[in-house]
Length: 338
Image (tube, rainbow, N blue to C red; front, side):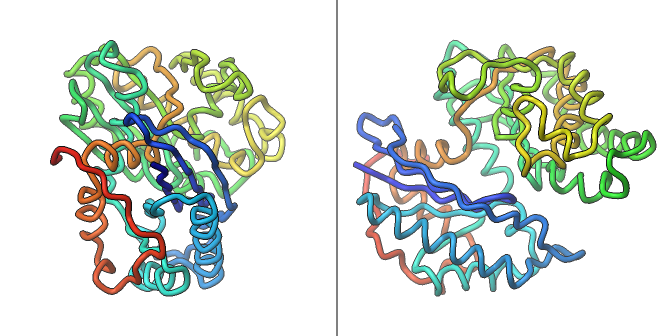
């Protein structure tokens, strides 16, 4: 059985095609289309026409690729930028009518739950009580739990791209005052969530997302060419040094550092400040870097709980009744209810 997932994020549209025999999603093909959608939104969050057109083109290409690989789906969703956009209904309808792919948006808490599931399956039960952090372009997802799904999940407006636009766009590199304001905002947003994580005292903390992966590489973790099974950790004290290093350099020079890619160089500082502040406030000295994230979480829930789970999730979106059907018939897999 082969299933595909399309994730429209702040920076790119990503397609993952995976074989799911035995309940484990094994990727057979991945593609990324650069989008930089977060840079093409108005002051009120409205997504610009050019960005919508590029989104439609990318999702159409993803759908065609999935069909070429004989994959069911795609299970298509958009994250914070589209979810919070005032013109979200129009954007999703344009995608549906222009591609035949029914794309939905997921609540931030659902994104946190799915990413937690991916981390739990990757790390196993040995991880014990688990805390999960995931930095996206528009939001920070946090979850904690002792079982398969989290007992607690939250989505906070602390995405790396969002905070870069709001606090670090005046000068490059930013001044001390801008960084002070940024830290104050992060501490304020994290206060209650961090207190909950401290109280739960997780046995293991995990971080996921490209932002955390790049920061871990900057802090000395194994490079990507070593593969997903290489042990990688991110220490709070190392993130503190990373913040100092990144804050001293303009964005163009950050891209020369180990692990920091040119497209994410500008937002790498905000991501590092969020990561360091979160781990410090939560009392977490170090975290495991998990290669699985929300896309794997979607695949896992689809496999474990059946196709009706995705139908229910996608059906909560306001465009579900008017969107065009996907040209690829959904794969029906029996499974327990959520």
